[in-house]
Length: 195
Image 1 (cartoon, rainbow, N blue to C red):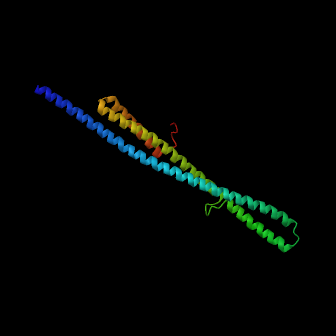
Image 2 (cartoon, one colour):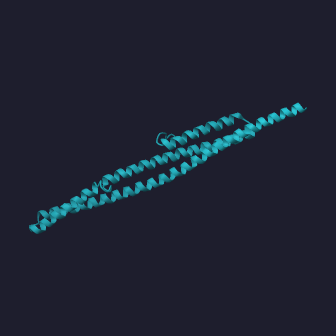
């Protein structure tokens, strides 16, 4: 009778040790979930910020384009007027104005010193769009990782109740997949767009 009680106690200890291991697994999964959620929020914020940056740069680009078009139209009109102007002083003044407008026109198109020419604005806007797209892809990977980790935690919790080893392996497998998606989001967000 005592031997049976001792055996029951040993079995209880094994089950308790197993539950402790599962509880540790749940803690590790919860830690990864917290990391994945934090990275996901950060990526989401970066997506919004880069989207705003790209939109602002494209608006600035459009404003420069409108200025260039206005200057080009005014220049063409002034060139025609200058052709038919007989007064040398007026003609000289018009040519001076045309040269000034041409410099401004060229500056609106290409201004490497300030980075505010159309060429520079276009390049900066495209770079912001790439950062936005990478952050959006990373956010998506973190979302997949978070979902996998939540399911893994549920499976591990169910394993404590049922004692089913398959649930533990399922939780570990999903945890591994989640870590992989988190790593992809962190280092190469543009690699996988499958999900």
